[in-house]
Length: 464
Image (cartoon, rainbow, N blue to C red; front, side, top):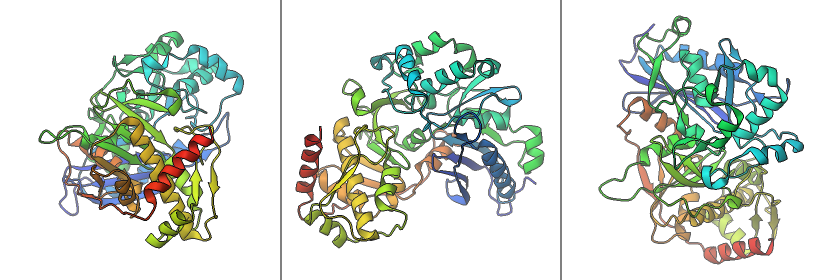
């Protein structure tokens, strides 16, 4: 079945794999959402190490593709995924499970890898815990499973793994390669010394632009899903770079805004800012955007930390709840995740009277994430407009509180909670941007809010 029941043609199907959730989103030719399905992104603990349940995602995705094929004529499928993840494949499929980057390889391997990894000033890729440096994952797999590793024909970044499964075409792409992997030199736009040292060049397929059509779906998938033969599989992109896409170009001479891409990770990106201010110890890095340009970034696991502070019983707070915590100096000090960030290695704590209910916990989580985001923007020297993308746009207090701390800067939020989906649509319609509205936040000026930030920063210094 290839015809659209509602007349929609050239629709885009975005496979959006975040660290916490997986989404399949159908968008029309103007970028409006026609249908969406989502599922948790589960980790399996059987086998040789914790790994992604790619087969469950695969069958869930095929079911969704079949369902959506009756809603519109789908012209393209675009994979968008989280970073720090890769797949080793031969002609038949995976030779090793897709490793979960939160898995910590044995401590003895850390020293070995430290001697292998390139210098920070060549990769702008900070040394990170667990498997957040993709190079460390791959070096451990090569050492621990040499026979399986030797079977691989291709080393695929995670978006391109899904594109390969759909189309049969192997490709590389710079946004995932340039995401704190230790594999890429963003300033030179070429592979790092680690790739040479490990002999991985032959495994890395030819580079393609994120927006490049790799080819049609495999014939068996066309028959299974009912998608049209004209449907193309797009190369795909790293998720925070998908959020950045619509902000890549200056408009009417106005400088590119800084972007806060929010989800499981909060990634602050400052296009156009120099890289010489990046510091490895603060988990600052250069991502590589879809055009191959290095972008100064800093990040923290803001979605995970918000969840830890807010708890399972999430109830949106009121202005009075925020003011009460500020008045009584209840503060959350970083950090509440062990996955890197500018305060990596610290153990989170709450000072002052503890929150008494779900609303106050939500308020504390909000205050904390605003303060860490503000800190990250300051480290990047982001002194112009700031755009908030993703899950934090659903928090009514986040942008107004941030705006109150940064007078003179326009802090705006987009009207969609998933900039990644928008970016996926743009890859199918390269050169176009959907009509996404954004609104500049009015500062929420609470009594003592600026002083609260000063006390929070002072408490961080005392903890050093």
